[in-house]
Length: 72
Image (cartoon, helix red, strand yellow):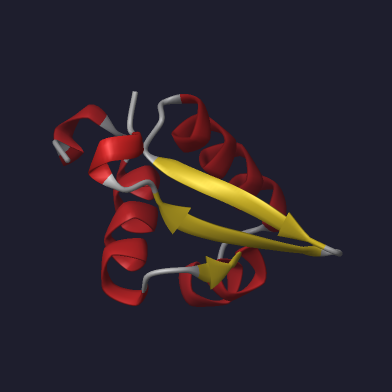
């Protein structure tokens, strides 16, 4: 992934997911210490760009990097 294509916050999200794999959106908020709205906005952008995937299970959102073969 060419991190220069993303904002510093989006780069941080990608790096965290590379290190931790699949985590909840809440865990990401806790690690990054930024508001839920900022996390949600950045996650949505990364989903649209095809870099990460978001899976909702009940009220929990799981976030993970898309595997290379699934990227657009």
